[in-house]
Length: 407
Image (cartoon, rainbow, N blue to C red; front, top):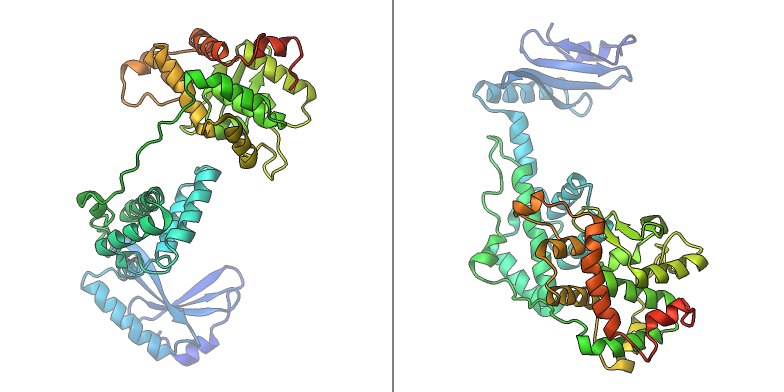
């Protein structure tokens, strides 16, 4: 039959299936589809790249029969010439995809991002790329990137500028594998952020090298032990004696601490590898005392939304002012590392203590260091710290054991 207005008007919704098709016998591939709910649409069906593909032209009412027939003739003509209209449409859509859309697709693909990373990414998009987020990705050129990087460096800081551009680089790399033209070629032929490397325009950021020096440990301990916030005090001591990252220590839960086996385990680490450390006497005593009075699932509980400690900067500033030693929480991890290196702890043991990936080291892949083999190097580090953190005789450790210093 030839599809006409009168025929389309007479078509009734199917009662025994979801949809039915009425095909034109004069223009092969042109048809009307009607759903069980009564919606009538014009379609084109044709073999494209060895598969029967169905393309919707539009709904009846929005298109007349003759308008739909003319659109069908155009599409069928393209297909006859070897053009894939579906791929062509996808290519056109991909060519105008915005930075915000790419970012959302990127987040959807990377479902395993840690909450902190996800927060940082969203914050960077909101602040660094406010003016770009609704622009087509392909409109972001090398020159624009160079100028914006310089602007961010001046207004937001050099480290922030580099961080923002690293995220943009990741989004372009993702888009290169995600969006293609009608021929299946990537729309991103070259990552424009590469210009920063080619022009040596990345800001040089000196890595922080600050740590608590050996001769400063006694004064540092005196300042920390004077804190009225016992949770903060114990939190800082734990990081100093273990080298844990600050979030790992802050989010430590009691089910990760085995006081009987004298170990603690961090399961959600930066490199996603479980990290178990031995608890030596100092920390074992500290955590035992905390456990006796704890009413939270977190070792270092806090009033914040997460339920764990959030760095009280004002109290940290008081310690710094009192002892005259500048330090950050991450400086304590660097102090642990510096002490370990000074004691000639074997490289593989040190990496395991810090939960660093072994990288491409083939030999390291065959070395299994269990927690008990880490007790000796941990004892060496603990002894070194303990000997230098004495306030007044007797030592802090002895005071703890005798219950004179309460946690």
